[in-house]
Length: 145
Image (cartoon, rainbow, N blue to C red; front, side, top):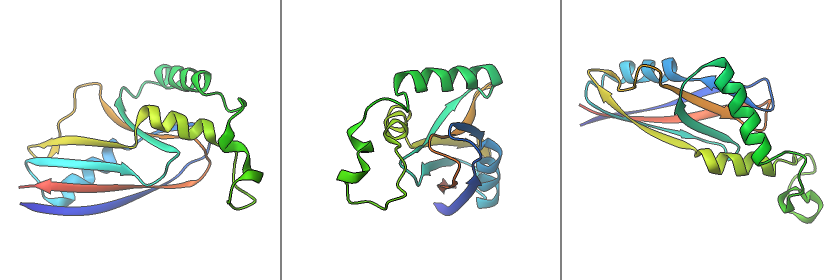
């Protein structure tokens, strides 16, 4: 069994932003020389989520509307009581981002088949920024034969 580790970095531009990272993950699989196996993708942040879904502009806008209605940034959250927590003074009020990330999840495991991601026709790997803009990192472990 062979394995390789890759870290990807992205500069996000918005508070809520969806970035299609599929091609970067495909490149990591190719560069790792894995023909059959899997890739595990993990967000290294508690306010960045990962999901597999369709990268279609109207759906992405629906996604933002839906999640921000379920966990609106302006709602009252205990986590946002910065003065009661041991944290830096510039800590953002971002409880909503943590809650949405918990709903979506922070990792994905995908099959690798014939040196490529085993994804359906409309599937893409989407990184969801929930508390940007920031610099964000994803960790990838590619393993197989």
